[in-house]
Image 1 (tube, rainbow, N blue to C red):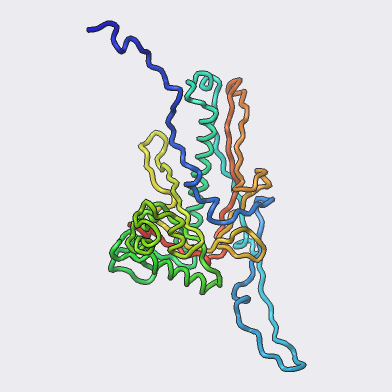
Image 2 (image 1 turned 90 degrees about the horizontal axis):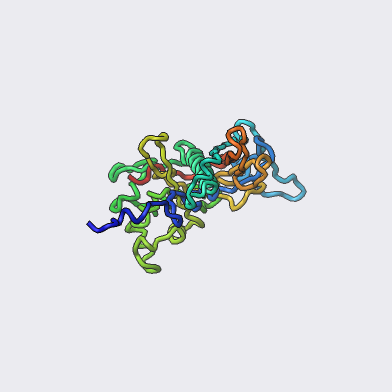
Amino acid sequence: MPQPTVQQVHVQAALTQIAVAYLQDESYYVADKVFPVVPVQFQSDVYFSFSKDDFFRDEAQQRADATESAGGGFNLSANSGTNSYNALVWAYHKDLGAQTRRNADPAVNMDIAVSKFTMQKLMIRRERVWAQKYLANGLWGTDITGAASGSVGAGQAAYWNDDANGDPFTDIANGQTTVLQNTGYEANTLLLGWPVYQALRKHPLVIDRIKYTTRADAVKITPDLLAAAFDVERVLVSKAVYNAAAEGAAGSYSFISGKDALLCHAAPEPGLMLPSAGYTFAWSGFTGLNTMGVRVAQIPMPWLGLETVRTEGEMAFDMKAISLDLGYHFSGIVQ
């Protein structure tokens, strides 16, 4: 055997130019994109709501000369039970001691790693709260549940990944008509879970609709093209995933927004007398920020070791479904 051997001439060491970590792109999250964010000074308060029924009645009458005009009024409420928000504070931290930091190889920048780790924890929590708040059955004006072909009926629609029987154009058009008829506002936003987005990209009805304007393959069918095809201003896709398993157990991964879709009218920005299916109330008075109330700080913890630093993130917000008739929910719309 030749001496020295290949193994003898090299001592293994950690590479300095790469380190592998799974960090989800910020664009995968939709919690701060679907509905307007309202910066608030206090943790909880109420907001006014005008009666839709009073504004939509036809009550003007023909007036004879020198007589009283027809008149009326409208109801206004600020009910603390329904028209209120409560911005809960969520937090997560990771401690980093001097021994770990100083002993780390160059490719493992522990301060950066801990900051990214903490922020991803907060963003996953925020996204899951969003899904729990806005993709629940029984919340919006209409819920449509996915069903196998042949069993479609009231409150059901054939699965959108059933290419032979699913008809997403008719289902979404029905939703648009329902929202407009009941509110006077058009649905302008379509939120899709990743599995739903994938089903629509390959659906023959979608491909047929756009084949004269672009290549008829799923690679070219983007959210913008779907928005144009379905006649909405925006199509947003939730791509974020999370691990439901406890630490130490085998990972159990799933999409946060799953197999649901939400068609809704979202106000372009918060404003007076401006309806929106939902609003997010960010407690900027607490965090000093006005976008989702998120902040991250590094806190010296010398009692745990002279150079121990805690990286702590917190966010304070409440997500509220405001005008329920401005939302049309598709639940489990793909198999």
